[in-house]
Image 1 (cartoon, rainbow, N blue to C red):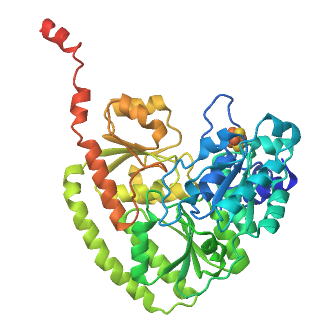
Image 2 (tube, rainbow, N blue to C red):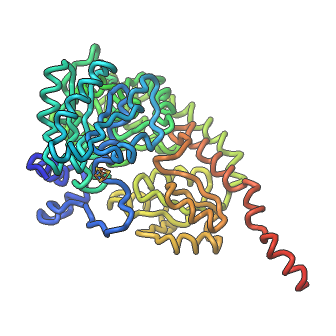
Image 3 (tube, rainbow, N blue to C red):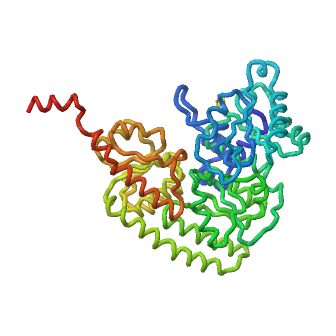
Length: 468
Ligand code: SF4
C-alpha cells in the first residue's frame, strides 16, 4: 500500500467521533476494526466497493473506475440511490484494463478515458476510483488526476481506495476522505442563510431524503448539501458554509462530521429519520443546533408546531395496522447498523421484537437499544443461518427483517421476510416512511401465499389420507 493510503487509513482509525476507536489502546487502534478474512468466505464487499457506494449517489458526477471490468461490474448501482435530476451517476465508466496494461502500465489509458468523458459528457467533475490491479502495478492515479484536471479544466478527484485496503465500511470512510481532501470547501455558495444544514451519511435510498425534505422545507431549513444522496458536486463543494451538520445514524461518514467541526467549527449531532419519535427528535435537534449557531429562536416554536401537526396524523394512519399486527413477533437482522432506530420505529407499530442483531453496533448503539427495549432487549451478537432457520421454523418469530443475503433462510423456513437493508425498494423515512414500513410488514405477514406454501405437498397428502 502506498504511504499516503497508509496515512489516510491511520487517520480514519484515530477517529475522535468513534467511541469504539476511542476506547481502544494505541496499539489496538492502529490495527483498526478490520478482521482478517477467511479465505473462501464471502467478504461482503471490498474497500473500493465501500468508497463507490458512499460516493456514487453524487448524481451529476462521472464515476470512472480504473481497473479490470469486473470491479465496476461488481459495484455498479447495486443500491437504489435516487436522483431528482441528473442521471450521469448511473452510467458505468471504466478503463477496463487488460494484460497489456498490467505489463506496460495503465496510466495512459486512464488519461485517455478522462479525456473522453471530459470532452463528450462534460460533467462538473470526474471521480477516479483506484482498484487492486492498477494499485499493485503502481499506477499513480493522483498524478494522472492532477494533470488531467489542469489539462481539461475541471475537477478530477482521485479516490485512492483499492479493494485490498480493507473491508467495505473502511472504504466508506476512505471515500469520504477524498471529499474532505479534494471537494468540500473548494466552492463558495451563491447565498448563505442561518438555516443551512448538511445531512451526512444519507444516501437517498429509494428516495428516503424526499420523505424528509418537505418537513425541512416547512420548517424553513435548507439542506445546503446532502452527503451524498441526490448530491450535486457544487453543493457538496460548498458544504463548509452550513451552520450545522446532521449525521444520519449510520456512522459510515462520521469522519466528515468530525473533520468539518475541526476545520470550520460546524457542530453536528447524530439523528435518525426512522420512526415517529426519532423523526420528531431530529427536527427538535436541528432547530436547537441552528439557534445555537445564530438562527432566530422562533424556529424552535415552528418545529414544535410542525411536530404537533404531523405526529397525530402519522399515529392515526398507523392505528389500522396496530390492531392487525398487535403481538406479531419480529426478528430484526440489520447487521447492527441503525438497529436502534428501526427498533423504536417497529415498537411504535405495536410489534414485538424477539431479537435484534448487534454485530456491528457500537457500545452507544447497544445502550440505546437497552434504553428503548428495557429488559426485553434480546441482542444477538452473531446469529448463524442455522439458528435463524430454527427460530423461524419453531415460529418464535412471525417475520424476519434483514438484508437480501439472509432472505432465503426465511423463505426456506416458509416464513415472511422483508428487506430492511440498503437494497430495499421502499422508502421508510420520516412520518410517511414509518407508515409505508408497517404497511409492507402487514402485506408480507398476511400474504395468502404462506397458507399455500405451508400446506402439505401433494405427494405428502395422499399418504396421510391412506393412513387415515
Ligand atoms: S477486491 Fe480489488 S479486484 Fe476485487 S472488486 Fe475490489 S477492487 Fe476490484
